[in-house]
Each structure stands twice: as structure tokens, then as C-alpha cells.
Image (cartoon, rainbow, N blue to C red; front, side, top):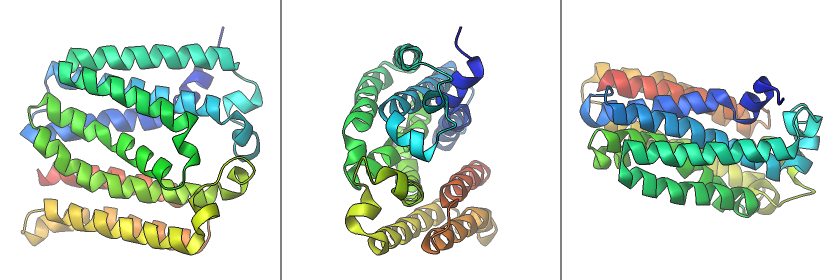
Length: 267
């Protein structure tokens, strides 16, 4: 019987829970209402889809992870590829079904999302910037899902404009941290474009994120104070990446959590 803890690790359960919270943030931003059954179904779909994306990506990256993350369940031998493959298929099917329960339109969108997640692990991850941008969009979709369940798709697009630049910066920072392990297997942005270009892209993305986040806040200076923790974390993360030190992706993730809290309070 497969190790349940190892399966949770493959699914990145913490990231999956953050995706579920993002659904509720989207619903709250759209209508100040996150109590609908449709929102719960979309949150559960986000958990399943995040798990699928991570599990399938681990299957595609076993060779890379033997160098970069040897303790993970697949490269360490804790789980068999066949087990993870079945687990990923179950998560994909569950995510699509739950999205249809939430809203038929989300179900249709989710079929395309699963296809894009699969294409990313199979091909797009090996394309500089395109792969990074793909993950940034996919990671931001929970906000849109939540807004749609509350009847506010346009509000969801507003949140996408905030989240995508920050996720893009985080993905670029991850590519910097993993450049050594990636080199024998794929040509990522730091390897193709060079570190200075990636540094500039991270700084630019953070700037766009800051602009969009501040635009959400009320002109009231007291509400604008709410976004300071998120912006401060972005500055620290950017400086860390520029200094060539690992750990910037975790700081960018923390910035997203701080931004989510600010959005909820400001609303």
C-alpha cells in the first residue's frame, strides 16, 4: 500500500491548500461572499488540480530531481512511478468533476487547464520563459475560479493581473535556484538568457505586482498600509535572488500569502 504521507508530499499539499484559500479570496473579492457550495466545490477542485500538476511534473522530472531533490518520494524510491501515475489520474478526474459541480463553465475551462498542465510537464517546462509564464498563469487561476463561483468573473481577471506577475517572479527565482541541476536536462531562462536578464525580469515583474496591488487598495492611506508586508517581502526576495542566494521562491510565496490577507481585509 502506498505511503499516504509520500503521496501528500508529491501533491505538495501545502501549495494545494494555498490554492484552495485563493479560491475563497477570489469569491470574497468578487462579492464579499465565500459561503456558496459552488465555492467549496471549486476550492476542492483547486486542491485536486494542484496535486495533479505537481504529481505529473514529478513523474516528468525524476531524472532532474535525482540531482536537485533526491529526498523526494520518486527519486528516493519511496513511491513507484506507476503509483504516482494512477494518483495523478485520479486527481485530474476529481478536479474536472468538482469544477463541473461548481460551474459548468469552470468544468470546461478545467479540461483545458489539465491539458495545459500536462503539456507543461511534457514540453513547455523546457522552453525558457514560456514555461515560467505558464506556471504563473496556472498558479493564479484559483482566484478566478473563486470569483466565477460568486458571479464576478471580471473581478477574477483583476486578481489575475495582480497574481500572475508575482508568480512569474517566483518561477524565475526557482529557475535560478535550480539552474545547476537543470543544466544537463533542459535549457531554462538563466541558462539561455543569462542571469542579468533574469534578474531584470524578476525586478520588472515585482514592479508590476506592486503597481497592481496598490491599485486595489483604497485611496485611504490606512488601507494602503495593508500591502506593505507583501511589498517588503518582495523586496527582500528580489535582493536575495540578485545576490545569488537560494530561498527567494519561499519569500515570494510568503509575499503572496501576505497579499491575499491584505486583499481580504481591504475588501
